[in-house]
Length: 213
Ligand SMILES: C[S@@+](CC[C@H](N)C(=O)[O-])C[C@H]1O[C@@H](n2cnc3c(N)ncnc32)[C@H](O)[C@@H]1O
Image (cartoon, rainbow, N blue to C red; front, side):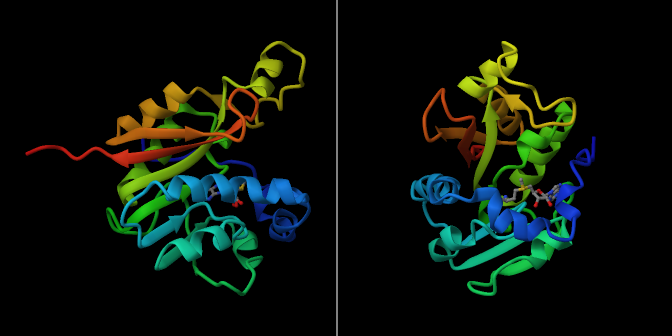
């Protein structure tokens, strides 16, 4: 298995980046939620000097990540999203797919993957994404997913909330996500959501399990 399924094309559209920087997270609360959770998890990590943000979208996390490391590299498959970055702060931007990141093994102390995994429907894609994130991470990965043990996911299962359909976003259990990363040598250290069982978007901090000689 060597591929990640192709997810929505909507981020390739000309104004996708501007939408993601602006109306998509319109309120201050919405804008600050993900950066705040990621900053809290990064604060638990030791010795983080180099960070990869992938996929970085239009650079929504840059202001939270840049002050917390010496070098930040931002990678995304969409040229439209990368083009919407604000000039300042300006991290190095790379157009690349998470299926095959153009970085050497363990190139970054920490790798951040925000709002991507819930777009993957095929189980092999989650495994592949976890493997690629783990490959380029020296020690930590912070990744978000939709928690199936949350009120919105429960409402979809009970038919009280409309499902997004076969190509929509999908919820996954914490155990399943932990298992996928554990197969590639990363242990789940902590899960964080704004409100457990209420917020669907959940962040996990994974740390490399070193093999003893
Ligand atoms: C929901 S956005 C999240 C962006 C950013 N992490 C954030 O939270 O603002 C999903 C991003 O995944 C990117 N993407 C989709 N498929 C990808 C792939 N195979 N490799 C890398 N990026 C991909 C899209 O271009 C888009 O920018």
